[in-house]
Length: 227
Image (cartoon, rainbow, N blue to C red; front, side, top):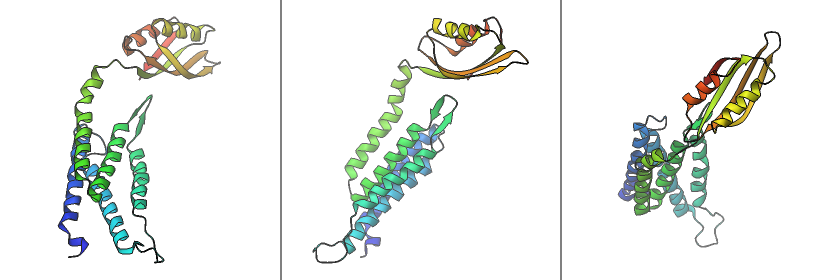
């Protein structure tokens, strides 16, 4: 029986698909772009890569030390780890002051590792890692939601061009325990208008609504946007 008909290799491929699909299902339920099918295919492909690499080693490995050809089966696995980085980067999306997709990218990375583990025959480790990953995705999310967190917002302010407007805004922010992070300014001399854009970090006690109302109450402010 040839290696392509070995039922054990087929079982490895099927297990890799199943474990990858379980993690992908959680991402699919939460509406992530890389979901059920993506994780299944990543794990399945990684498994096939390592099986093929091991078979190359079995056929062409320089076991005696006298042949001209030597094959390192670990090189294919290393390239899988490198290549999955490009797919993970595609799942990361920047939205204003926040970044989404880091967990999905990490899931793709784990799915690739599961495929490699199944391909080499480390079934128990692969199943254990899948269980740990699912627990972290499903249960630890509830713990994260209960923890106080800093929130980041992009603030845009339009107002009359006055010498102390920027200082008033800075004072209003700091009185509420809000930390401004950088910013840019646009001054229209002809219209005597000032535009400011900056990021802020809100602690657990502050809120975006409080920030919006506080800035809107300042003299000379014409428009405020918080997003």
